[in-house]
Length: 431
Image 1 (tube, rainbow, N blue to C red):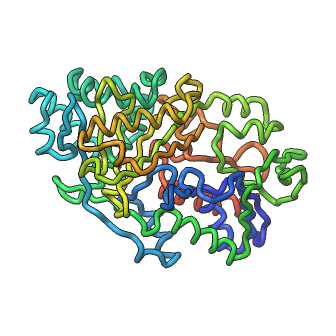
Image 2: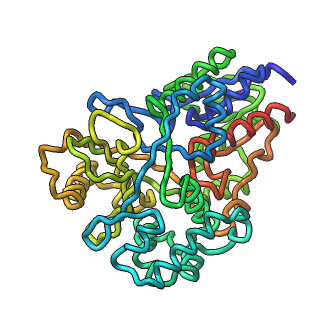
């Protein structure tokens, strides 16, 4: 069946990848995006004259789906790989991190704790089969391997200041995938290599949009879908700006918590499964500085005076005219802190960065900006994938997915592209 008219909800990387594949396969996708720009969490904004992502992104050499689409779009020559460094702010001092020598020299841990931590990280990087970890609780799994000393020093704050009350009910498979991805970004035992695209994520986003349109598809911005119309057990169209538009099929890539309000006519048991899904929110502060903060791309943080598990000095990956630091504050969306004004987070970041690097003065802060995203990341308890509704819902012509569906992998551009292209191919050939 060729030339189908298919609605795609959401113009993040997954939605664009769905439409990209559909258009190249001869179909007529129409992407509906509520925002005034493409990208979702990868979207860019004007940060005092600098075009940059609202939320930081990086690439690993293992991001095969991302690298493949760059090649197809003629963008492979814009990919740049950089040797990066990691650090750890622990016990009021900045220490090297991220390789065996740094671990051995790390101040604040016993030799036994260092050995157990290193062994766990090494074996996690080498492991490929995640299914035995699917129903295992993450904190208990980590403690069994690294012990209480290393857990308290190196893991607890990551859990406490990202997941809060959800910390003790997370899937070990989900945590393992993060350890493995970073571990596999190393091109030798002591050296880490990450990548960025010239012009940032917007280079890819605009190329995907242009390719979709060149192959007969559409991308409509500021066009929020208010309802997916279901008639006699089949998705027949969408309501946009009060008007019904008919479609052969509908593919949604918006965050799952929005699905019940857009698809109220789904079976009650399916709606209950969507309602049961929890998400972490984020307030991400970006600081533009006249001086570097550190020499690290990653900086893990364990400091009782800082309610963050870490930060990213993005300009130590992608060269920019100024020094740019991302400081994400993760928390459940219902947490009182998420209701605090932006200025509260901006003030915290100013103080945190000056503590980490006392050479910074107020005059070194060129600009600060806070972005918020209510559904930044799914919270994945043990057995998470089995609790999700199927991608192909019990309604003909209707598919729903977001970053949750490539569990246990973390949300990422490459994973979204790979999943979206496969979803498009499956949906197009299914009646």
